[in-house]
Length: 339
Image (cartoon, rainbow, N blue to C red):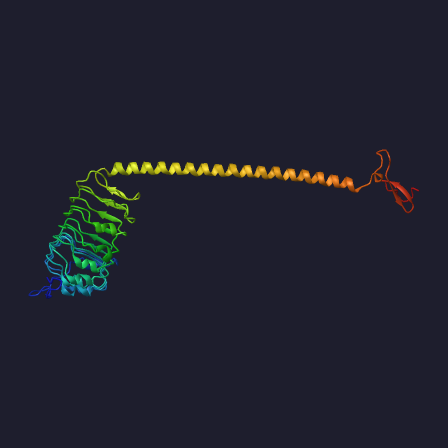
């Protein structure tokens, strides 16, 4: 097996290459590009798999006990997902570091103590699971992979994180650090503002800092740490750990009470606005009626002042209107032939 940076070896050297499992063609016939060989014991991955480069997108070799990977594996140019977990690999094969479009890599439960510099060639990698290995230090090569989104590093031997992880890996959304040897929360985590999931279970952390400034955080797991109270986090963060359930129930009760108080305050303000509006409308209506009454009185006074008294007659006098031929009473128009 060739390791990253080591001299490549030809898979199956000194013997005939093993054939691919019999159901390989049947699996690929589904059209989703998945080969699932997990749990099947094989000493090496057959070189002939490289002839299927155009068809394979996902390759699962978990728990196969494979000890050799073909150096030509890089020819699987369409490969997006590769699972090599639970195979006890002491180092990562060079061919894996050369896969041009790999997006997900699972290499947990091996015997890895680090990652080689050539690992940085996997610039398309978004998800890396490297849990249950023998990492005593954070692999600094990962700082050259700013596009990494999910990093699973649980059950290792880590005691801290590099101080420049926040600036070098701003794209991190999920970070699993459970089962390590952390005695305190690395302060650099507080600067990972895009982090949404943080798992710190099963460490030795006795005191948590104020983590309410981590605005992107949605889930924090702190179980199995010697803490006396849940960490201080934002109102939308889900906590998992000792006392978390009671804490979140109380927080939810406070939130509901606050919402009710805010709703009551809004209703009270609305009622005050409506009462004020009604009062203003009533005042405006009274002023309008007063103005109309004054206007009416002014017009009546003006009318009386402009007409002399000799233009008016007593009630018993009949109104006559002159006509060329004579007079007729108001409202009576003589028909032709009456006179």
